[in-house]
Length: 167
Image 1 (spheres, rainbow, N blue to C red):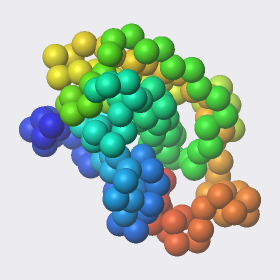
Image 2 (image 1 turned 60 degrees about the vertical axis):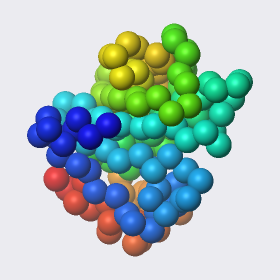
Image 3 (image 1 turned 180 degrees about the vertical axis):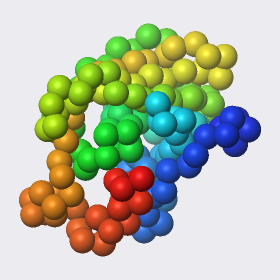
Image 4 (image 1 turned 90 degrees about the vertical axis):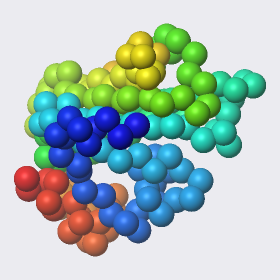
C-alpha cells in the first residue's frame, strides 16, 4: 500500500482535526483516506476495515460509493482549485471487493462543463490492477467565499484548504 511513496507522487494536505467519514484523520470509524497527485489524477490507497462489511466478507457497496465520491471530490478540489458539492453520481460495481483487500483508487476530471460544474470520474482497482468499480459524478464547483457564505465550510477549514486551492 505504500507504492505511492516510490512513484514520486505529491501528497495533498488535509486537516488533522477533520472528521469526514471518508478522509478525516480524526474519525476513528472512518476510512482515513490520504490523497496523492501527479497533477493529472488524484490517487489513494485504501484497505477497508472489517467493520464496514456487507455480505459475508464483501465491502458494502455504500462504502465503495463513498470511496469513489471522495476520490472524485478531492480530484475536483485539487485539479480545478474549487470547493465542491456532489450533485449526482453513478457507480458500476464490476468485480467483488473483499474486506482487507489493498485497493488503488484513482480520480480525474472527465469534463469541465463550466466554471460552476464539472464531470469527474473515479475508479477502484484491486492489488492486481483489475478494475473493480467505476463512477462518474457531476460536481458543483464553488468559490471559497461562496462556500463560506453558504455555511458549507468554516473560516478555519477554508484557511486550511488555501494551500490546495492556491497551488
